[in-house]
Amino acid sequence: MTERTLVLVKPDGVSRKLIGEVLARIERKGLDIVALELRTVDRETAAQHYAEHDGKPFFESLLEFITSGPVLSAVVEGPRAIAAWRQLAGGTDPVEKATPGTIRGDFGLETQFNLVHGSDSPESSAREIKLWFPNL
Ligand code: CMP
Image (cartoon, rainbow, N blue to C red):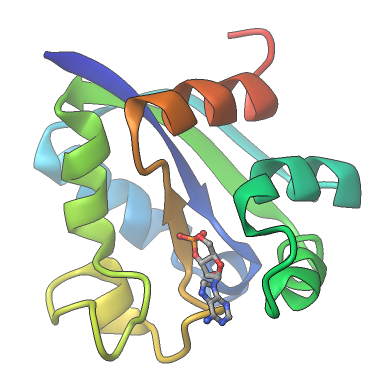
């Protein structure tokens, strides 16, 4: 079934010049990039994006981090796109969970600075795409 997912390359991924690497892996997998934007988000948008983590000990520093520089946002489409992108990204903790060969496993060291984001369900994908690409 064709699905859409929201992909982010976070400020650490952008500053480490990994945009090309990430987009290349998405294209190599056979997924379609249907929307793409580079921008620095405000605190309000970041808080909405990460609403489910509100109240967690890392919430404030996560907001500070995600608003600290440009973020690449993309809508990626294809069969089972949500799971396919999560497979490419690797687990949230780049050392304990992500395996070599994944983006986080190959390039990441710390859980907060884990380079990329992907929607975790069809519901969050719909919500996140609406937030990042209201005109799509
Ligand atoms: P992401 O997949 O974007 O979803 C939530 C983000 O919160 C996660 O990637 C990390 O960047 C961050 N995060 C999750 N758990 C922790 C943690 N224990 N400490 C710091 N940051 C975290």
